[in-house]
Amino acid sequence: MKISEIAKLIDGEIKSGFDNLDHKFEFAFASDLMSDVLTVKQSNVLLITGLANIQAIRTAEMSDIHCIIVVRNKELNEEMIELAEECDITLIKCKYSMFKTVGILYDTVLKPLY
Image 1 (cartoon, one colour):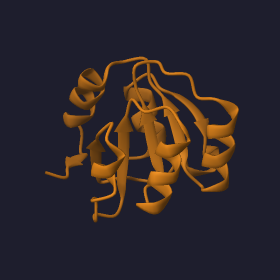
Image 2 (cartoon, helix red, strand yellow):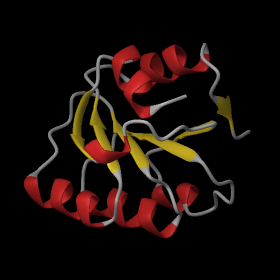
Image 3 (tube, helix red, strand yellow):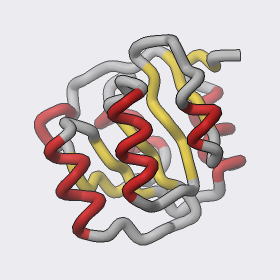
């Protein structure tokens, strides 16, 4: 599923990675624990999290994750957006809870990791 389609489904606001809107993802993983994200060995995964700080970007970079959906209408500061751009990571701000966001995406072609 393309990033542009994902953002539309969840009423998301794309904050970085505008050049990657046609990039497709096959899997999704939801977590606020970045230690759990570091255990992900699957490629082509998007991350759904409520953690709105630099650590989420750094963890995604280390885990080769190129799209992060930040839920619960958390504010994404300029430092996060700039780092995401540098790391070629698309950031999507979503007003929904993690539960609702995951539920919406679960009904698509995206697969859970576990």
